[in-house]
Length: 487
Image (tube, rainbow, N blue to C red; front, side, top):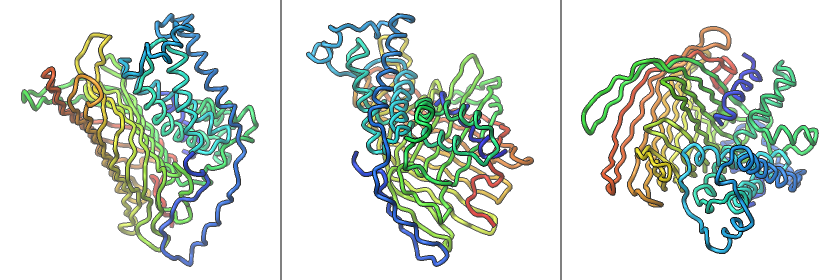
């Protein structure tokens, strides 16, 4: 499958389920001397073309449209605003608080709303760091003027940070789809894919004929995308507390999509901008009378490159931003995080390579677990701060396939609101993906979910271990499985 078509499928699957520094300042580079690689030219320090008012108008138009629809059509109570309700947000009658909205609304709806504002700014030519102001102000505008409810502290955090991290991933992925002029994909198909990933970006590109596209995108970034469809076959649940084991019969259909952008290993590629390296993994499960899924994003905010064409290890390290969302019923979790990490490619042999990413992050805000609460006026998930760790290992054999291990853990302490307690949730996926023919591959994974929780106030201490098997058929953007080393 050609790269443009693979990325288009990623767009179709991942979109909805999905000014401190000058943005053109180069990242540090720790590169050993190499006569075979020409030094990178110094970046031009010129202000990019930008329209700073257009994304403001677009954000407010979106807010007004959402509020009007909820007010006039669905008649939602939160949208029955008035001058008095707006005044109450300023005179102390409705002070800021943590709200009790549904998990999906708070942990996906608000971050995606922030991503729309952020991508509107980025596609209007606003540099990354300046663009971070837009979801912050857009969220503040929504909380103060477009809802009758008290302004929510958690919405302000997730809309801003989640909107930035998710928004930049969608912005760059959309630009990658749109720029695939040599892939053979028809222009209108690429435009549709770009729109699904970044509606505001596609509209601004059309309005300005591309003249306001952000100036800090990368040229020819090394990337790998793959899209999979398959089945989850049964499963096993075990409660360590009661030592009881349950068999989960039946089959669930699964759809997955992933994109790794700025893969370490290319000595000519420079990580000059925020999110010059990022990864997106998305999944959707259909079966057992429910639809669940999630996505996991991480991107390099600032860092240093190491290695060159003569070294066996090449990579990048620095500060990463993360936004994760998973809606699994018993072990659901969502977080925004910032931390230290590294991503590298290590040549172990002529045809054997290891691609590895490791991160340890602080979590200013996360939501986790299911508290078993049925009252809609009470939050049924745990919120607080904490930490998270991410490991992604891919052992590749040239042009044949990989063996991949991905592990994620979130430890969340509920210090913000009642009920107080803690959550520890882990997702682990392990299995091979091999080439069948052309761009088609066959994969098999074991997926493990672990949850430990403790809430002393109400004695609720769920513990669960879950295991399921997964078989998938994949379309690959290239036959090298993201290997950045060509003979």
